[in-house]
Length: 141
Image (cartoon, rainbow, N blue to C red; front, side, top):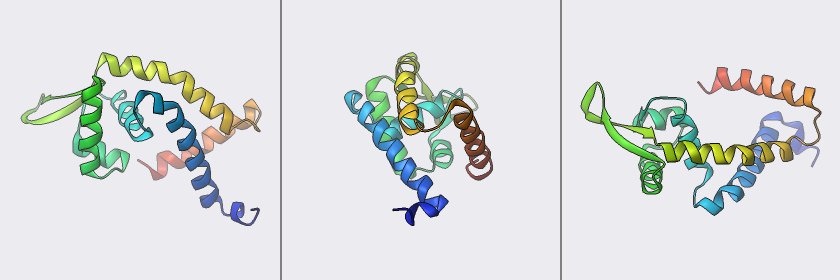
């Protein structure tokens, strides 16, 4: 196993899979998956987004975004509204129920993080977060 973990990219991939598994297990009760959560988290940072923007920013296929937003609308967590600057376009916005759901999942997110980062002390966790943030800001924006 040590040989596999010598590759940092592969190690990040494996840790990402584990994180997703843990988070999906928590979300399973609500009927949502990590992809839904990612859409909600993104919407929490904006006043609304076009579906094509969600697709581009989250790296999901546009057809997948349609289904995810449909699911979130059915639950009352998001809704499509006319775009303020172009009435022909629709933006997706987070509802108050969606905000409440995110607040309720904050503790689960901390539990997942604590399980993944259990071997690290607080300083190590901060250092890892800072490094990952630097990589993410450069490579995922």
